[in-house]
Length: 116
Image 1 (cartoon, rainbow, N blue to C red):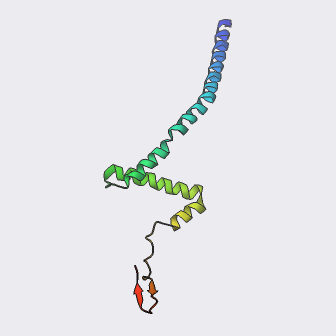
Image 2 (cartoon, one colour):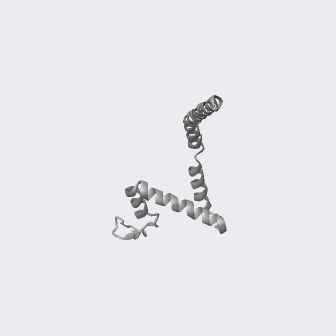
Image 3 (spheres, helix red, strand yellow):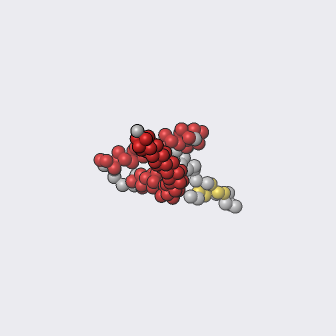
C-alpha cells in the first residue's frame, strides 16, 4: 500500500514536471517560431507568385490557386482596411481619357497653323 502511494506520488510529480517542461518549452519556442515565420514571409511569397502568374496563360490548378490567393488578399484588404480597400476598388487602372484637339498657333502674319 505504501509502495502504491509512493508510486502514485512519483507519477504525479513526474507528470507535473513534464507539463512544466512542455509549458516552458512552448513559451520559449513560440517567439522563435514566430520570428522564423516572419523572416520567411510565406504569405508574401505566395502573393508575389500569384501576381506574377497574371502575365502568362492560366490553366487548371494554377488558375485556381491564383484566384484563391488574390481573392483572399482582396477580402483581407476589405476586412482589415475598409476605407483603403473601397478606394482601391473605386480607383481601378482605367485607360486615360482621350487626348484633346491639337493646339492652334497664330503666326505674326495672321495665318493659323496646327501643331501636334
